[in-house]
Length: 89
Image 1 (cartoon, rainbow, N blue to C red):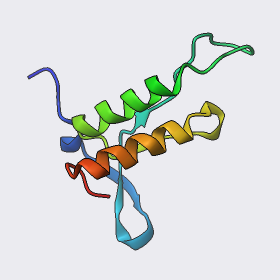
Image 2 (cartoon, rainbow, N blue to C red):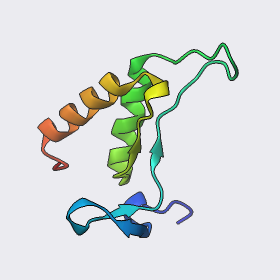
Image 3 (cartoon, helix red, strand yellow):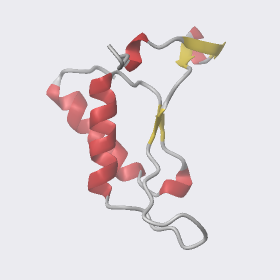
Image 4 (cartoon, one colour):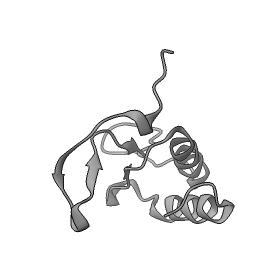
């Protein structure tokens, strides 16, 4: 198919803590309504949806840069997905 599950994408780079290798491709979570000096972050709901979709698609590296101001929404999505038992931490 034209779509490749993210979990089938290669891992690479150097080994991290415990010898685990990081995925080469991560899920971006920056969602802005305006680009530029006056950028505004969309609702936490959008960030939560993005993370839930990404995890279902197989992403395991989530970009949650401080400047996005959506860390709580990402954490809420992770807690919710883990509670469902479909994905383990």
